[in-house]
Length: 382
Ligand code: HEM
Image (cartoon, rainbow, N blue to C red; front, side, top):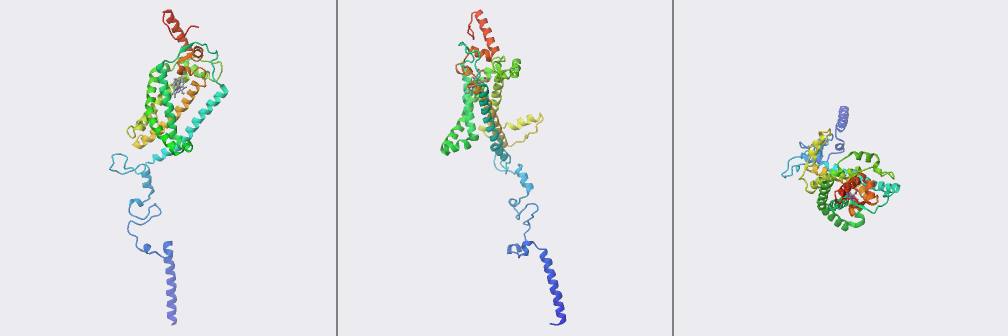
């Protein structure tokens, strides 16, 4: 090799090394190790990947994971579908997950607390106060408190409500409470029959609701005596305290209106659940509430309407069960002589005087007036 050739070879070698370093430093790390046959091919148009916007190679929409598109779909964006269901073109009904999380989370948790809480409170009340006695003792004379038709109305409502409450609670908690005890066969049978009875017994509940409303609404209108009764806690917490009351005291009036108003709302949401997608209750109710400053959604899909119906049905049902458990306590073990009112319809006169003094006085006055005019009336002479 000549001196000149040697120099040119050195220059060419140095240039080759620099060129290699330049090329390698500008290549993808993967390719730097040596391209595969696929990677070595030229990328067709539309298949370029871009790691910054989340898209992946491919030209169809299914391979595009663009966050903006997914957000829109999750928020309800949809296309068109050849089905009669107007929401058929919707890919994701994200509110369904919100509803599911609410149902298996706060609804179940707080309902369990409320139900166990009222039982604990009543047990505590019983321990501290004991049974509320007829303080002047039984007189042996009775007065008619509720006629047969009133008792039929009450028991139609009461029995149907208890069946609805138990079968409804089974839908909410059965799989956690009964399934492990009874096993899948028995639990399946009970739940199937429970669901069927829940649907049909609902109509008996509505009939009972109408009956007691018609018979008792006038006696449950608010009056001045209610304030005094409430101020004294109904005399429930102190012995020898009997605030005056008419046929129904303020506590009973509150129970009456809770049963009527929540009962109507439970019936409406129940019917909408029984005939899915036929009755939309919430969009219009929310639009009405928005007049009073609320900011509730009014453009609800048919599925959302069902989810609101279910959620609201359950919340109200649990609230009413809590109220009714307290009512059942005071109407049975909690107060001496109370059950007779709905049992035989006759209560002891001393019970009536202690708990419903104004009503008893009215009956006595009517009795006296009746005697003077030769008619028989409610309260027997002593
Ligand atoms: C075993 C269950 C029940 C018992 C022992 C019971 C007992 C009674 C009694 C004794 C009365 C008359 C109170 C009085 O004379 O002043 C009454 C009234 C009433 N009951 Fe019941 N009841 C039961 C279940 C229910 C249920 C489930 C409901 C509703 C869903 C209900 C709703 C009412 C209403 C609205 C009144 C009139 C207002 C009041 O007294 O609070 N009852 N109940």
